[in-house]
Picture (cartoon, protein in one colour):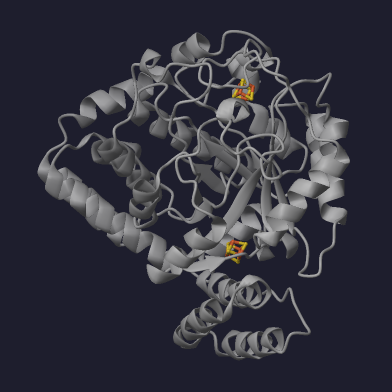
Length: 463
Ligand code: SF4
Ligand code: SF4
């Protein structure tokens, strides 16, 4: 299969024409977005290219409103879990590239259990399993064994309830195996949709094949995985080009499989061992990064947006107001990093973490800022994936499940991991938010479940 859904000239022409979009056109585009109408490619390109500060402010406000209208104020929490740093690729931006000289490692099942135990003690219920690409050391069977090991673990306070998987592009047969292993989202970053830039930063290994990489989600969908998450690494190519590439890829999947990206991640190139950030000519400034995050939120209102600890505290705080709906917390980007004794040696991390606060301090701050940290994994466990999920999101009913699930899982978190102060804080959020659940039956069921959680005997309620 060919990646004919990415037409380079079409994107370049759109972006060139967008330079001449007048104020009235941009205002009309934002009016449309505020009314919940879908924007054309031309309108999205105009928003991306505007440098007018008043327009940018309106873009920010619109993005924030859209996020609030669809998903409310819940922020889903997760943590990455690196299981292997063996890699046969040579990606210029990554410290795991095959030419990096360090002792490679993959977790034994005992080590994996140790990592999961620590993550569970932080309160996490949703993990993103990460691995480099190496058929010999990190085969699909090893990945499947890791997933099974994680799902088999039971703790006093529950278990990991959803394992998303971020591994290299693979075959349809392997995707079927992942599907059978009950993964959550299959995540794969395209890195860049600009083929010449892609070729210039992927020097060796299977990932060098642009066409094979970009058609991975087609194979995943053919294998029955209807929950896929895309992303690019901003800073490799023109970021506006890559936003348009993401949107075209999403449209291709929607057209062909009736379901586009469940999530879009917005990683930005940051320093890593064995690379010099100044070698990359398309680094993205904070202002541009905020603008593109907000424009993605406007362009795909129903798609979850994920932000990692590549960004620092201030930037994460800002982007949460612009449409981010899921963040990692307390992360390590190193194999065995959670159990590691000497935290000061970053040489085996995939990238340097810029928000190294503990999970609990991130969760506390979210609450102070008016968000509801959510440990919800309900949709995937209820079979609300693919077009079932999208039709729920588009019907504006998603708030009727996100809010109750956020409150029930936060209550569970506070009972199992919080101190008295934290429990008081949670109780006051719950008291304020329960009346906001629109559906009366769900509202009363949520209140009842919260009472049962607080009584201490029952856990894991979801709608
Ligand atoms: Fe390997 Fe992925 Fe790093 Fe590339 S980005 S070197 S494939 S781990
Ligand atoms: Fe995500 Fe579904 Fe839970 Fe909402 S209800 S937080 S969309 S899993």
